[in-house]
Amino acid sequence: MKEYFKSPPFFITLGILIFVGLMTFIFKDRYVVHYENPSTIKITEKWSLPRIMEEVSGIAFLDEQHLACIQDEDGIIFIYNLQTKKIDRKLQFAAKGDYEGIAMVKNVAYVLRSDGRLFEVNNIYAENPQVIDYETPLTEDQNVEGLCYDQKNNRLLLAIKDKEKDKKADYKGVYAFNLTTKKLEKKPVYKLRFDAPIFKKLNDVGKAKIFSPSEIGINPVTGDYYFLDAELPKLMIVDKNWNEKFLYFLDAKEFPQPEGLAFDKEGNIFISNEGEWDPANILKIAIAPVSHKAKEN
Image 1 (spheres, helix red, strand yellow):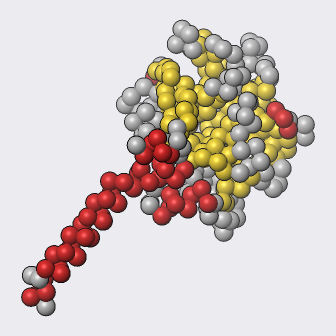
Image 2 (tube, rainbow, N blue to C red):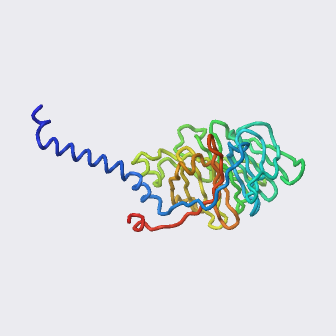
Image 3 (tube, rainbow, N blue to C red):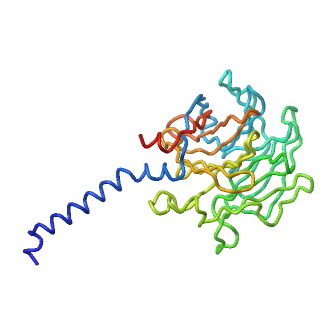
C-alpha cells in the first residue's frame, strides 16, 4: 500500500482531482451566470439615505421626484425627495413594529407588517389621514415581507418569506388581498416551489437552496413580476403568466440587503438596501441584455 502512494498512478490521480476541484471553484459562479443570467445589472443612480432610514424595508413610487418609504422599526411613512436627497415629510400611521412592505393605490398607502397585518393609510397628503388595519390569516411564522399593488386585478399581493402554515408544503405562496372585499383569498395565486426548474442547477452548485422573498413588484410596462431575496441577494423575474424567466445573483457589495422594490411609470427599477455600518441606499438599476456567446468571450 505504501508503494502505491509513491507510484505514478497515484500522483496522476491526485493531480486530476486537484485540477477538477480548482476548475470547479474558479468557474462555478460563471456556470450559474450562464445558466440563468443572460443579462447584466447596472446601477445608473444612487441615493444614500439619512440615518433615520437605516432600516428601510419598503419603497413605493409616488411621482418623478418622490418615493414613499418605510423602515422596519417604526410606523412612519417617509416621503423621500429624489432631487434634493432629503425627507420632505414624515407621516406617523402606527406604533413601533416590523413593517416590511408599502404599496400605493392612488393616494392611499397600504403598509404590511411581517405578521400579515395590513394598514390602510387614506390620503397620505392629508394632515391627519384615517388609518384602518386589517387582520389576515397570515402570521409572524410566515414572516410576510413582500407587498405590491396589482392594478389590473384590483388587489394587493403578499409574498411569504419563511414558510407556509402547512409545514409540509413544498412551496411559498403569494396571496391576494381583494381591495373590494378587503379580504385575503385562501388559495395562493402563485406557488414558489422548492423544486422549480429555475433553482435546480443553482442547487446543484450549492448557491441557493430556496428563494426567500423580501419583496415583490410588478413592472407596469411588461407586466412581469419581480421578486427580491435579501438573504443571498437575488432578483427573480416571473412573467405575467407566472412562469419563472430569469434569476440574477446580485453583487452583495452593491446590494448588501435588498428589501425594497419600486417601478416608475416607464418601468425603471428602484431597489432599496438596508444599511448597518454603511448608509442605507436606494439604487436605480438597468438590466442590459447580453448574449451567452458574448459573455463567454
